[in-house]
Image (tube, rainbow, N blue to C red; front, top):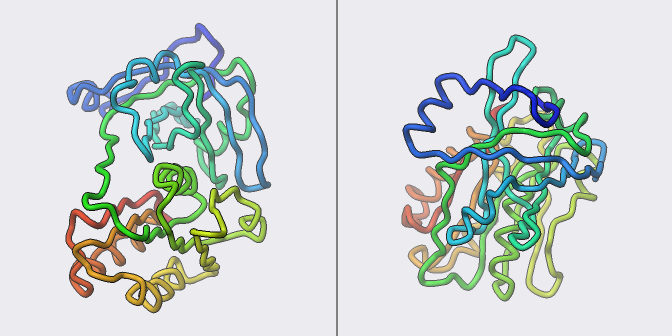
Length: 253
């Protein structure tokens, strides 16, 4: 829930207690601006409350934080969001929201300069593939777009093929940070199949680009069910080693 500066902190419930035991670090972010990228996608710019200075030695591609929201029933909800363009010198970054129904999207739609929101950093991490792959194989959607862009930015000279699932016509306008000379985007409409079209397309096309499974690198973040299905297929059917598949379910339908 967005609260005014100085207001009572949002209760974090048992999840907050667990994260504290796991040495999660808490911060308060302040909104400095917002941009409606499309009708279904919103970018909120924030000051970091000291996060980037505290994490200066551990900033990494696809880094995410847990934001805390309060629903109408007062119960705490935490959702994870990727840092977009973190600037440690300025102490700022942006967060991007694929809008749908729910407390996080409701907060993002209302977010205005001066609003604050609490966050916890715990659990985020990234291990760069070693050896480096000749091509990144990336599977994502609007929810994982910030992480996809972060990954592409971190490997500026590496070729990439991106399967990008879309749900709305305006998703064609989402800011994928691709370069025509080394990046290829293959868009897949989600339709009513709950991720089946994406899984089918990837199964049909990815093997031709895989090369040697032990030196491949697949980064995968879609809805939880599709991510699980494709991750299992990559490891069992294509024999891609576990450490060469980075798979994380970003949302549930």
